[in-house]
Image 1: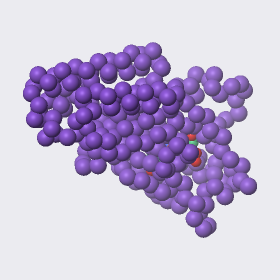
Image 2 (image 1 turned 45 degrees about the horizontal axis):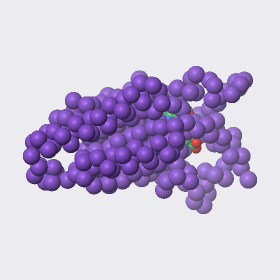
Image 3 (image 1 turned 90 degrees about the horizontal axis):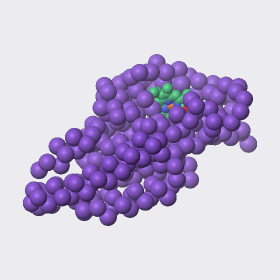
Image 4 (image 1 turned 90 degrees about the vertical axis):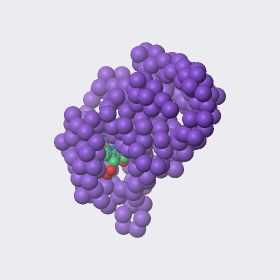
Length: 249
Ligand code: VOV
């Protein structure tokens, strides 16, 4: 048996995709819409308080194309809290005008492929902590997709030695690092939680950098040979003002 990678696991993560029932939303009065949005904004204020206390984080994006209209990405210390938020949203009036379209459950993950020698508990290391328990960037754009590492015939990631995987991941990391300041990645592990092995969430102010990064990685062995990918979702940030504009009928 190959040596398993050791993961460090941080906050639990829910990507919640909804489609808006625009005809139903437009059919109600302006006054009713305002009441519904006030209830929704009050819920977001609570999320903001949680984020300010560094007990979780969230972002909301408008999704481009027909796979979904809106995405909530939520980070919380426990799976229970994620579920409570999901249920609380489902009980708001606004949820009556949304149709769940896709969701992804995972946990922020760091693997030990690039870990250097360092003493002590990594969970006490401030740099590691900032990656495991991140405040999500409020970047202009997001790109989300789930992925697996292939297990087919000669191309079985899970049969490679630790040294081989480490060397492949080093090359991956070098490409990633050349996008420093342009793209920020949050890798969430979902083995045992959802249908794919990882969720990849990328943040950038220049949307074209997603295409450049993902394309460049396609030629790198770890993606070219071992990467399998699900559907891609790309979106534009919705801050509180943007949200009000978004729901303005
Ligand atoms: C901004 C770019 C960027 C950077 C800097 C970066 C760096 C790194 C490092 C250093 C490491 C390993 C240690 C750790 O930190 O966990 C990883 C790990 C990982 N990555 Fe990555 N990645 C990036 C970006 C990046 C992208 C775009 C993708 C999708 C691949 C593609 O082809 O579409 C990806 C995937 C992953 C995955 C699935 C893992 C876990 C693999 C495993 O088997 O455990 N990643 N990644």
